[in-house]
Amino acid sequence: MAPGGAPTAASAQARTTESAAVEAAGAAAHAPRLAALTLEASFGSTRAVRGVSLDFHQGQVTAIIGPSGCGKSTLLRCLNRMHETVPGARVAGRVTLRTDGTAYDIYERGVSPIAVRRQVGMVFQRPTPFPTMSIRDNVAAGLNAAGRAPARAEVDRIVEHALRRAALWEEVKDRLHESALALSGGQQQRLCIARALATEPPVLLLDEPTASLDPVSTQRVEELVYELRAGMTVVIVTHNMQQAARVSDRTAFMLEGELVEVAPTDLLFTTPGDPRTEAYITGRFG
Amino acid sequence: MTAPGAAPQSTRRSHPSGTQRAFAERTATTVGRRHVVNRVMVTLTFAAALVATLPLLFILFLLLKEGAASIRPHFFTNMPRPVGEAGGGMANAIVGTLILIGIASAVGLPVGIGAGLYLAERRGTRLATVVRFLSDVLNGMPSIVLGIFAWEFLVRPLGHFSALAGGVALGAIMIPLVTRATEEMVRLVPTALREAALALGYTRWRTSLAVVLRTALPGIVTAALVAVARVAGETAPLLFTAFGNQFWSVSVTQPIAALPLQIFTYAISPYDEWHAQAWAGAVVLLGLVLVISVLARFATRSRFGLGGD
Image (tube, rainbow over all chains, first blue to last red; front, side):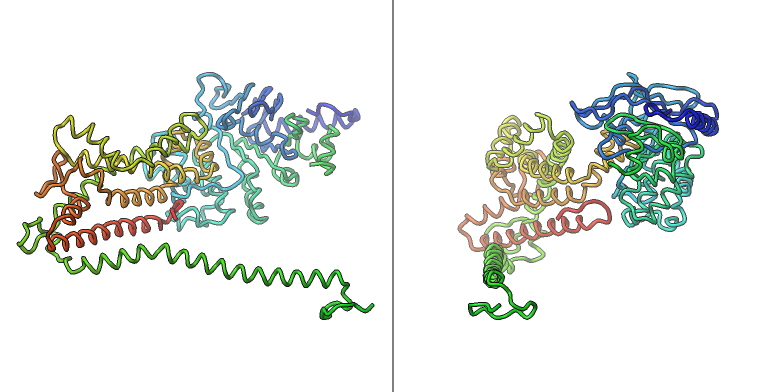
């Protein structure tokens, strides 16, 4: 899908074929797990997201890139109804979430934002472990949110599973009852990822997760994100184009609140359809 | 190029211009003057700190000098005795003070923490502004006025003085202190933590209690203990609410003895023995406040969470 621009017929056809193949391979002919339709988000009178329609598929990592202030974080926060927690913020449009055979609009009347957030996990830019809880309790924090707390042995099993998925188990298995603040920044961020994974959400949103990490931790988190996509739908916002190129299957480029272009990652970075995308990728702005 | 004037030649550059040398001179003078001013200010602030601590040191010294002699084990275990009999104590007053601050905490802490949490979480609303203002007004209210308030609503209808009335009056003094401190500690909790909890699917309520309040708890505990120490020594509101009691009583609905009241009664009496006991009572009260403050410091040094100062 490359609105705007004037590609040659041959490359357009090649792109369509390739992107169709990638889409088919990645999505296995399923409807998208999460689909935003003409999403509008504003802070008071400022429109941050303007009429964005974007699909997110099972088993894929979708990256959203764009210059600062283009609305990518706001778009992400609309996907788990976090945007409305800011006073004065408003959202219009549909976001359809498909799980367990049912599909519903998360912004429909009567849909509880709490239920949505339990299906759509989020990891933020800065690691935010709960300072009063141990490592184990941090990972298990999301389990209590449902009100019913599972039995202790079950919680331990879930915690270990989540920490293994987040590639943190080996480093913390001997100190599960210590403060989460004793971990390094990279470890704390992986702890936050484990915390989000503990409830096994079908969708995981990552808002610039490596922005505050050193290069080694960044690499580990990127590897982790790449591995997580099997069995999940992952959306990652990043201002680092190389990261998007390394980690994602599809990339969407946003500018001033609008979705300019979305395509399989390698195509977007090698042969972008829109001149604005090309200008951003080649570093002419942003 | 020869340079006029008496300025010494710099070793680093040959032939500095007149402007450069003038600038260097002026800078050196300024820097020198700044050093002197710095020294003077440091000395002045140090002296001010010393002067500020002097009254406390004087009081401590005087109290210990006058009252230490009368501090005996029987002071803590015996009831007050008539003049002339040896071995009198303030057991009922000590226990009474503890009961009063217990009632005051039961009233002041839940209300204060709840109000502080509300003010922090709903900052911008008009109700929050009004509540904050009223809390500040309550803070500035003379304690005897709060005593009158307790008298009007708890003593007059019931027909007698009571520990409950005294405790409520003290609790009313505690409320604005705890509210203000709770609000400030809760505001210190980063928004990112709240968002992390919300994103996990926590309700707003649960976020406030399980995450925000828990993180701010050490600071709140410190403030609560400081407030308790403060009301432990309040006398004026107790004059016509708890009223004092020369007998042993732990009943909430009867008048009760309290250290400040007992000190007052003994101090204005004409008997030297009782004067000595009053000094001893003051030392014990001071000790109580000290123990509470040390506990507050101890509570701050927790493993997790944001500490108070």
